[in-house]
Image (tube, rainbow, N blue to C red; front, side, top):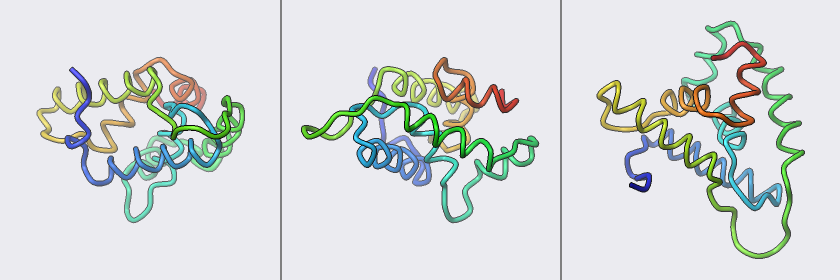
Length: 134
């Protein structure tokens, strides 16, 4: 069953939209989990992800630098269509839905997205794991 974007909270929708913007701005043909992680780290207006990471003892500034460096290593394409969801990001979104379902939450929030990033094999998971976020 395809992921239903209307099941995202407003903040989660903003994070997914921002990840698409990041991919488009960089000329990346696909939106990857690392784009979503970058978007969650940039969350404005009282987002929960940054405070959660700080509470876990993560060096968020260092994590942002590592994520930015990783974004620069992604493949680029010029012209054509806007970036689409990668298979890896699709798996992250499905895992976030499973997290929400497991918590009996009606909507997928940024917290569910973060949990999914820590549990779904991707470069974003590797970066979080390197920073002791599991």
